[in-house]
Amino acid sequence: MKMKIDELSDKDVYLARLLSQLLIGLLDSVAGGYSIVINDQLNTTYLRLCDALDKLAESKFERPFESLYAAYEDIDIEWNEGGVKKQMLNFYGWLDSLFVKYGKIRFPIKNSYDKEIVILILNTYALLKSYKQYKSILEANFKDDLQELLKTDPKNNLSTNIGSRAMPSTFALQATQ
Image 1: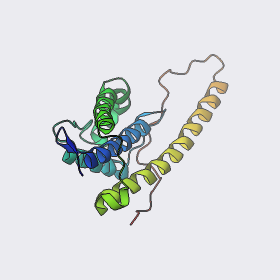
Image 2: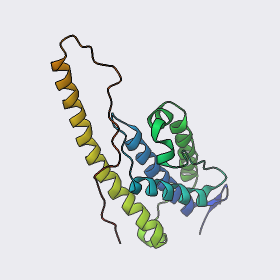
Image 3: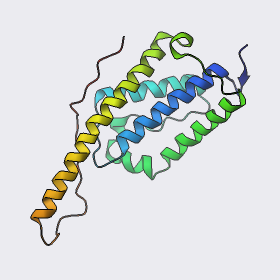
């Protein structure tokens, strides 16, 4: 039997909650650290996650950014300090409260949802894993470069705004079919 609260079925709540986790993870990964790296694959995944959430919870979901490219200049500030992360966490909290009301019912992803959603979920997991590995290398290189600069500047006259914004990236994901 399918339960329905606030116009979302238990199955839709489970999916929206999972998609929200992936979206929050993607934005945390992009906006965190010293470098901001955005490419077409990340942006497309972001847009597809937002579109899927729009379809499920249109009256409650508000897209954090029009696109990752549109938010590129200040995505770190907007996400971490501008209230956008709080907005997404509030949405996730609402979904989580519905999930609890439904009795924490879980649905097997591959058997419960259409192929397009399953591929989106699997590709997003793989993309985030690849992206986090790539970004950790960038972050380590940045820290090493900064340490080297500090060694060559005995008076520490370096600007406090030293930062790296690389675009586009060289990481890639093989599509899951």
